[in-house]
Length: 527
Image 1 (cartoon, one colour):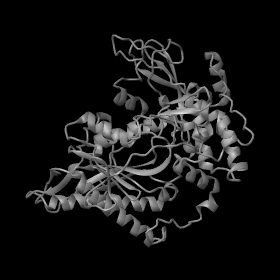
Image 2 (cartoon, one colour; image 1 turned 90 degrees about the horizontal axis):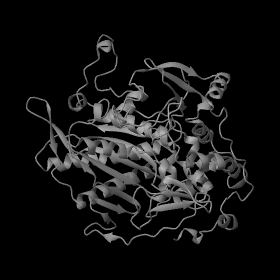
Image 3 (cartoon, helix red, strand yellow; image 1 turned 60 degrees about the horizontal axis):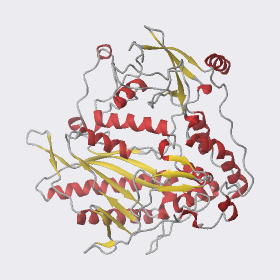
Image 4 (cartoon, one colour; image 1 turned 180 degrees about the vertical axis):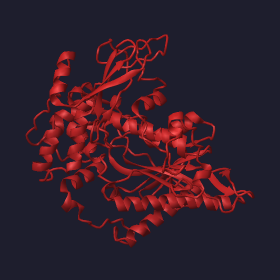
């Protein structure tokens, strides 16, 4: 079996010629689905990484930091470059009926920027939430962001980030409790699941929190069973009040813990991180601001609109406000019966930081990152030097043992109401009914095998033969280098991975303008 962080992975794509590697065209009369093995080495992201990763290491060791990047960052880049390559190992499957053959490469299972592995994690977690966690009630998303000064600290200080997340969740849960008490509902309790996203759409470092809240409260009925009461309405004034509560509580907690200085100016005290990890500290500071080596770029900002009765609070959109670097957005809502909307919301909060198809190489050597939707100032794409892109990618990698998914309120694992409000468990299969289990009935989130997850995601049984729809059976796991090379030579596939480009000499930039002015805000991003 594959060891460490490896697993088998497949991906759907456009039609390709039938081959022994599994790039097979499904029978249109049966499914109308086309499957082919993914080839990450042909993509733009893989090319940019392998052509610039050694330059990034050299720049850190000999240039702006003087020390190597942390091991977990280097390991993430190395594992991404091996993800999906047959020459690093694969599983061999064969149809039991017609003998059709397919091979599936290992994946890296990373938590950083790999589009395939983070996409798989998104699909699996969203499926578990919908089937085992989120009750059949309206849902509302709250998104909170933090000032620039706090972002490098939150990105690599797990205790501080966890404390801020608990304050945010508790503040919103308290709002629901007080708001519904005004509607005559006493002792109401809400719940939420929260995800920490590390970057914005332009890959700038910005730890922020997406939380899906039950849009209302559960209260006990006379028979003792919980009854759901939906929030009747939400106004921008209430979102502004809630933002002020979150901001004051977060800043008071940071002052109490000695993280920031008390006073009107937000000054973050030194915690020694720059001495322990100087390379990562400099990358974090650059990725927050977009300055070299993670930039440069230039943005236009819209004029703010003041909110009456809330000094300092600015309305950026309906149910979206900001104040002194903090912002809160609560406009996304989905109904209890909107299954597609609920699934889309779950996948949105769990989305990967980077989509493969949004990255492209330009003739002048820049890398263009096309945004999913334009910014408010009209920006629809970000052009970066390849080395600047890698600097931003490095900061999307969470440190080891830093959790990014949290549960709170009635959806917390130990909450008394959770067994009564989560979706009922599915009936056990015949072969599993007799198996004893030690898990509580509320802890049903599981690892979903790739074939089952692909069936849930793409509505297609990938473990079925594309020719005759027979069952594909696992025949072997090819892991030994000699066996891999012999097998791939027989298939006519490369036995070695694409080579890594050597490190470039200082000043390391590939774009000529940046090589001349590496520390300046150039005008090349104005257009």
